[in-house]
Amino acid sequence: MEQRPVEELEAAYFDYLRVERNASPCTLKNYEHALRRFRNRSRGFEHWFSCDAETFREYLFDLMKAEVARATLRLHFAALRGFYRFLRRREGLVRDPLMEVQLPKRERKLPVVLSVAQVIELLELPFRVVQPKQAPVWLPARDTAILELFYGSGIRVSELAQLNVIDCDVVAETVRVRGKGGKDRICPVGPPAIRAVERYRFEAGVRDGALFISKLRKRLSVRSIELLLEKYLAQSSIAIHVSPHKLRHSFATHLLENGADLRCVQELLGHASLSTTQLYTHVTVERIKKVYDEAHPRA
Image 1 (spheres, one colour):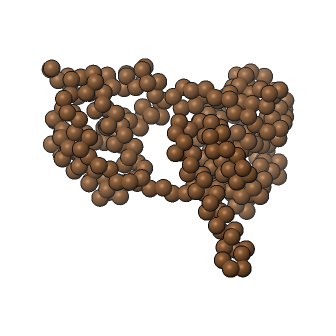
Image 2: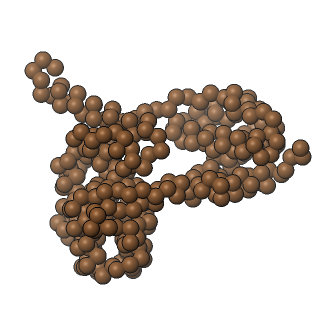
Image 3: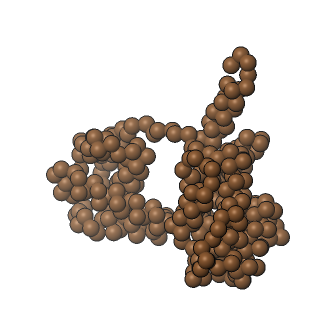
């Protein structure tokens, strides 16, 4: 079979990911970066069909010498493996060179989580911190609603930014979330989060469209939410760096510590694999061991 130009092959692959696999914009961006980085750094690259296992071993060695994080390294090779599976199925590639390449094992770092007391401190900050004079009066109510909904539902920051008013059911105390791969799920939230959202909507006059808006009444971006969290952390006594994802970690860990079923937590987090959720069981074990070491006289 005649080999198509490199650019055509890549364009066909990304069309496949976008249309048939319903890949997210973030996945498409990461995969495009991975393919481009390989082409730019691989010595003697001529065509995707001309690469062999040694080509990819050299590339892997270069990444490891550059001290690229293992998670990033594995993401790059996930993109390359997906591309070669596509070439085999759609473009007549006979042999997949990546099947002969073994990657280093994934690093399993335990996620940092906040204590319940630290979470409560964070949730109370918007009404305690002095807001800028030009800020709308409803800003503390909005920020409290964001933090309460984050911790109350465990959703991702990108999922929270996409929420619309219609997604929040105050009667059922649930939110409908559009997750990875375009999959919707229903997440329960507690009364404190529901009350915070209702107060914010009333004070800000938010009736439809985007749930969380900026001072200019535009949908709040993911970056704006991250900056919001950074602002309040700077005013808190919390010594560790806290990203929106750490609130998600805290949500999952606190559920498991209080006896929640692992499968239920998996559904709430929107994890495709139970193995991803199982990481939080290690966190709870480590915290229990720490308490034991500090409290037991024979520890």
